[in-house]
Length: 99
Image (cartoon, rainbow, N blue to C red; front, side, top):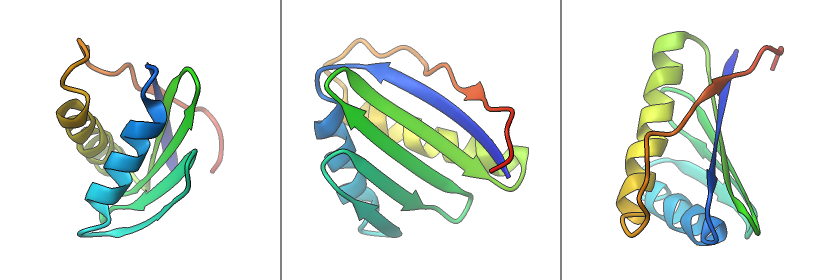
């Protein structure tokens, strides 16, 4: 299993987590609380963790192509909800650990 992580510094991390999970839940299985969400895409798993300083996004998938697609789905939808912020492309960092 491959994993990558990106972090967005924002005062609206919990708001974006809620919006993303609610939006994705219309089409896929999602579990969510105020600070944590898991989105089970066909291409991989998206894990969202919010705190007072931002939103941590973790993508997990079985191969590089699916990992890239999972990252893209998360990032493109986040950009829609965070349109008021001057978002730059997220800096996804590959994690070197067994998942």
